[in-house]
Image (cartoon, rainbow, N blue to C red; front, side):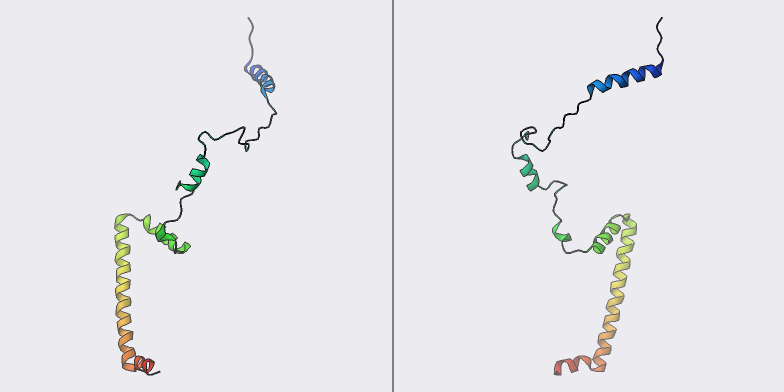
Length: 119
C-alpha cells in the first residue's frame, strides 16, 4: 500500500500551482479589451441619480455641518423622545416670546423706539 502524509500533499499542490501562474499584465483601461456591454452606459450612469452621484436635496443646501448633525441626532430619537424634544423647543420659544414682550415694553417705557424714529 502507498500512504501519503497530508503535509506531503500540500507540498505537491504548491508545486503544481507554480505552473498556473501567469505574469501577463492586462490593461483594464483599454476600451478595446474591455468594451461596454451597453454602449453609452457609463455616460448615462454619470447623469442619473444613483446612490454614488445623488445630488444634495434642495432643503439641505443651506445647512451647515452642525445643522446636519442636529438633524441626524433628532432622526435617531424614538418617537416619545422626539415628542419631548419638540415640547422642550416649544417651551423655549414660548419663554423667548415672553422675554421679548417684556423687553419691548421696557423699551417703550424708556422711549428707545421714539428716539429711533426722530433721527
